[in-house]
Amino acid sequence: MLFHSLDYFIFLAIAVLGYWLLHSQPMSRLVFLFGASCAFYMAWHPAYIVLILGSAVLDYTAGLRIHRSNNPRVRKAWLIASLCGNLGLLGVFKYYNFFVQAAGDTAGLLGMDVRLPLLNVLLPVGISFYTFQTLSYSIDIYRRKIEPTRNFFRFAVFVTYFPQLVAGPIVRASEFLPQLSCRLSVSSEQISRGLFWILVGLVKKVAVADYLSVNLVDRVFDNPELFTSSEVVVALYAFTMQIYCDFSGYTDVARGSALLMGIRLPENFDRPYQATNPAEFWRRWHMTLSSWLRDYLYFPLGGSRRGPIRAYFNLWLTMFLIGLWHGASWTFVWYGLLQAGAMVLHRAAYRASKRTKDAVDPWSVRVSKVFFCLQFVVFSRILFRATSVDNAVDVTSRIFSGTSSVAQVSAGVWALLAVSFIAHYVPRQVIGSMETSFVRLPAPLQAATLATGAAILSMIATSAAVPYIYFQF
Image (cartoon, rainbow, N blue to C red; front, top):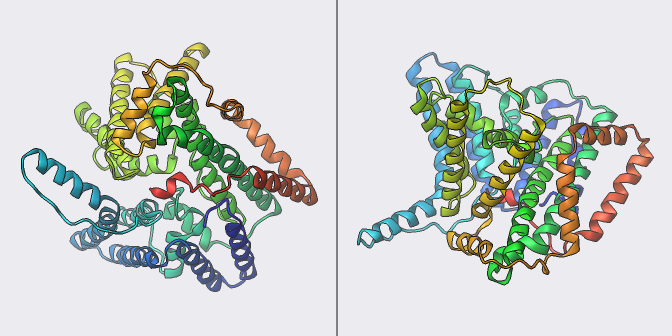
């Protein structure tokens, strides 16, 4: 059930209506929302709901046991059970086949014929997101940062909440659970803001991401040999904007949908292509994943507290795993290595410069840093988008082919790239003023705006729905 489909909005209307009809019955409301979230997930593949429910039962039980015991060994045993259970499922369904094939390839290089069985299973949608979400709950209880909820349905809603279930943002229990416990209320302003962000997300997805995908990006990566050097470069910029609008558009729809129920989800993007260096980029891109790995991996490893060598290793490992989190393939291994190397080099250069944290660059210097950081992001996306290492090599080789025609890039693609990049660099308050203006409109004018936007999007939408990129992660 894609967020930009009619099915989703029919489902959302029913879910929101049922949620508010049960506003005076907290337990019934939780059960209803849990059931709706399970139905949403089961629309993709019914059998895999068992995995989510298994994670929910495991971490609900582990949280209670960890909190109840003062015995360090018992607490650690339940934490290990949570870690092994969740990461074990993630490893089996997402990484098993890749590591088995890698082991076979390595054995082949050593002259051995090793053939291990492969699993013929689908990758559960959203498994990387809800695994990290439930893990943070157990870890935070173990660290005594939060107390467990004793209401299973409240916890189950936290795990399965449909707006952010399959592609984030990654929500922490400390942010989400209190919103289910407080008195239910929502204002007309919240509803207006929710509808505004749903519309913004749909524009990003349908009008920008899908158009760029169908009209240039997919064609270039499917057959790079048919395109010139310049056309491939344009396609890389197009993919850079496509993936941003695709993922941030999903987040906008998710946050808007949740706001219709009075629930606030965290931001996941902060205009990432305005970053001046790789570290800042990852603080702006997929912010909930970056902060999760910082708090639950980088800091526990020691962060920068155990000397410079250990700090570089901790940073390298964290960034490498960010790359590998995105997919089980050699392209993502290389993508992770590239991002990790860039972060280590940036840290080394920053320390060598002895800059203070409050140092401010001149405007011209900042612009140049943003430009060069964007180029790194754009060209590293080859590994992110390529279907294989061979495909990445083919695309890269076309960049150096020396051909310069752009005849296969349509006027629509040029116009959309120009508008979308300009919009990305406008001051944040411009978008804020648009949101405020929409909220202040009378309800009939808001409805007319939404109806007009929906009509336009339906006319320009591609003939076949394009899935969200991050569904595969």
